[in-house]
Amino acid sequence: MRSSFGFNPALDQRVACSAAVLGMCALAAAGGAPLARAEQVEPVAAAAAPSLTGVTVVYSRSDGTLWRYAVTDDVDEPLGAGRWPRLSPDGGRLMYLVGDPMVFGNAELYTRPITSTQAAHVFENQDWTVGSNWTPDGQGIVFDYLCSLYRAAPDGAGLGTVSGADCFDDAPAINPADPTQLAFHNTNHGIGLMSVTGAGRHLVPNTLAGDLWPTWSPDGQSLAFMRSGPTPTVVGGIYQGKSLQRIRADGTGLTQLLAVTAAGDKIGYGGGWTGDGQWVIVAATINGVAGVYAVAADGSGVYEQLGLSAGASPDFVGTVTGPSWRIYLSALARP
Image (cartoon, rainbow, N blue to C red; front, side, top):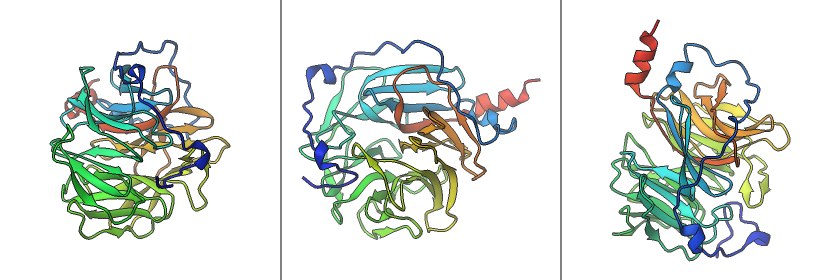
């Protein structure tokens, strides 16, 4: 078994997927008031706030549950058991891990309709899986396993290798504007790019070891990512994000979107852009308050905590959809 991506030998524990864990029974929504909002760097401008109208965020919590939060209706809906969900482009299917992805050993990859508990076991993980993603057309998935990146149909059929260049190439994500281009992270080197055929593998200039979880902007020109370096801190096998960054695919325009400095604060894994490119939404702990935050993509430092229901802390944002332009424009037209 490789020792990568924040692996802590003391935590090298095999996790059996019990029937209780695999059961996809819907969980009751956690009661109580929404999480308290952290102090903001500055208030979100009135002109910018409507762009969150129509946004929906699919995420997971540290207690091993999947959730979907709709900003417009302020509805935080439990979706069952699992970790690190990705919503298909058509919004109809979930892909997620079952097991313990927090130490990345033996977590199993599943897909299922978002409205059903009937899941397809996509991949039998005998060792190490970090991240997965859908292809932009929703007809395939990409994921890492051990020392390779793979591509398959959503049910696991037609499994093929994309690349086996480096055992630390993980968390693949295909460019939504150019489905021939794939981004990944390498814990030891930074953010990388390659063709979906595996050709042309190279690192993005101005990224560092400990730069993780690249997420494409809607126009396919930029990547947002979590920076844990230059001296990463690893707690329980997890890299603690110190800032959220944005960079162009050619390595220019590196911009810090948000930084955390208080003890215990961190930027979480995953992340997603709103469809208008104005916000990057991540799980984070800011000023001691764990939640899901919309961070302005322009580098202004503006951020807004979303009003999730009370409960376990969010640990991963997998997919962001919206804003819905029809709703957004009608909202602007109101007196």
